[in-house]
Image 1 (cartoon, rainbow, N blue to C red):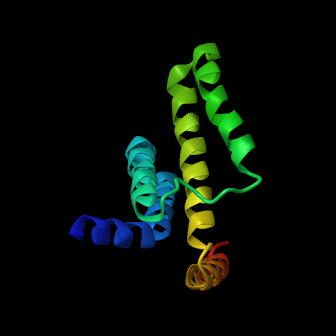
Image 2 (cartoon, rainbow, N blue to C red):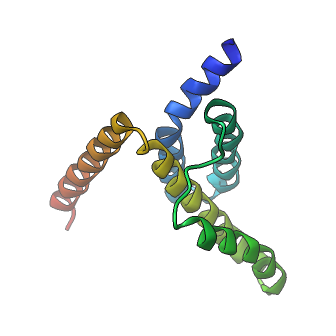
Length: 132
């Protein structure tokens, strides 16, 4: 019972954790792999709590196609040290997208994401005022 409560709490904060990780990945490339691992750990928790890995969307098939093409990308690249971080960036972006999708499925989650986007817009506006 306690494991399910902890998992339910973790799923409720998933979007904020994954968003923070995605922002941290912009700052440092060294956080890409840990961000992918942590963001992917929310999927089995969501399955435990909600009985599904993700909400079904029209984005599912293109996302699956992109993930299936990643080994081809890694095999075909002559410069793995440049390609691998970009693969991690793609995965972090996809995991963030699905975290948002799964969070806005509930009305309270939609309201929270909207407030977060408004806050991000305000922060970007203030940053633009202070830059040259």
